[in-house]
Length: 254
Image (cartoon, rainbow, N blue to C red):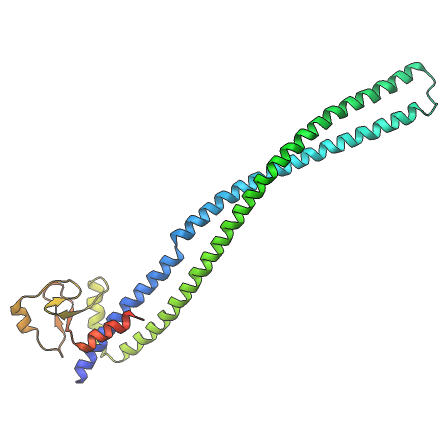
């Protein structure tokens, strides 16, 4: 194999490596922007908001129940004090006696009303508690699914990043084997042609623009050791050979 032909193979290798590097970078970007993850996180946000609202409502119910319990407790203390006074033998007037009896009666009536409210509230809390628990379980399930998916994505990203590191090192090696003027020409064409500077001609078809060259052009483009120009897309054109085909298969697997 001549030195020139060796340079041509490395030029194709450079193009293939760069295409694969771009593909892997895009794969990582797509993984990190996972539509499934975004959907899960959005749904998690919704259920979290619902759970938070339900938690606040539940705490309000518990707080209201506590206030009722405190009021009932205070009334009971008041009743005990009045009853103790009533039976202490220290009341000297019938008016005072009636007043104490009336206050005890009123306190008991108040407690009856408060206890009814307390029972109603306890029923409401008992009915609300399983709903809150269900929302919490759903929130935890979403959280678990999100963490699991993030871990899965992280493993895939790490694997691709490892492959990227290998590809980039090999790219450096390929560049070091190509003459600077050829690299400069390659970069120039690549910049003008959407990031693809080299095409391979196989069976008279350019593997980039997919155009079949005429038989007359095919007669002119025959030397496998020369960089030609595709008559259609104007990219640097290299004649396919077994080494290039093997190289394509190898780099595609990286």
